[in-house]
Length: 365
Image (cartoon, rainbow, N blue to C red; front, side, top):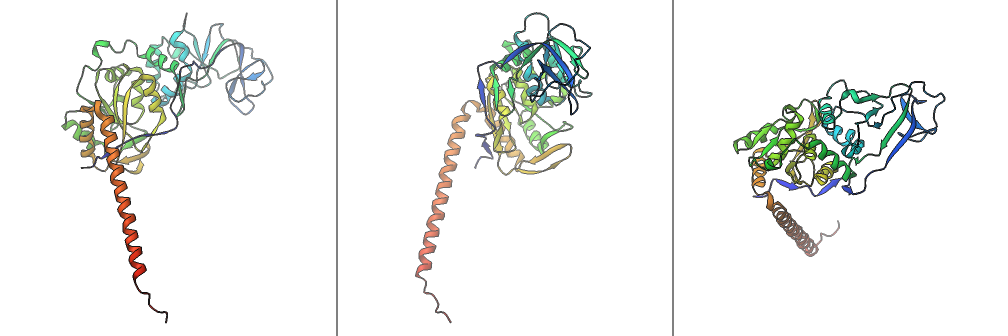
């Protein structure tokens, strides 16, 4: 029987891993000032430094922040996936920070809802919500540290970003527990209230996985530390591609991940995070997937044969070490079958064409 899953071989974006650290600079006497079109910007020596270059508005700020390091950070977002890839991208200097922890300077306030993950992650870095300085008024910053992002969506990741993620995860898992639990786990979105995508018939997949001995887990119901430990202790983690997989960046290196993807091309963020964690992730597109609207999600997708897909996931989990050879053999067989079908179609067209040339034409009336 033909496989219900096709390996995702192409990326939506690029996966470039840079060994060099991003650019880092210390700015003396920076200023937070209102921008002409609204909001605030950060300026130094008469030029804006947190966005497109523009002249500094008139009027120096009267208020001054304490003369301690302030590390600039992009907005702390409640969406877990973007918290990892966007907010943390400028915090990489904290992995090797010497001395007292800096304040975090942001142009946006702490999110009114959904900031629990941010609090947990910053706590691992020795910071709290009280360390966030919101630049929502004119202010002089005597000591500003401005780091270029160490992660750029669907594009590039620096090793420094991996160092930061490992510093966050340090102590949440033990070496003697890595891969200690052989029972696979499946990360379900069934209880997720909102998000980007969801499998419309995921419960049918989960039900069959449960029958086959896979543990079903709802990651958003677990504290951050337990999620990191789950990735570290399980030999194989399954699920549909989504933010929950980003937790692997903080887990033990070399995680085995089986992901169901909604299209043949894989969002490059997953490949980038797998690269910095040294993970062995394999992503698959279910053949015959259909798409539709989904309430509270950007879209939903339906797997054609949920029980069969579940069975293939379990089979692949048990044979994880041989997946590359197996997938390559299946793809070669598929190409051979396709070539034969095309060859037959070409030959058939040729026979039909020759036959038509032999058929006498009726005289014109």
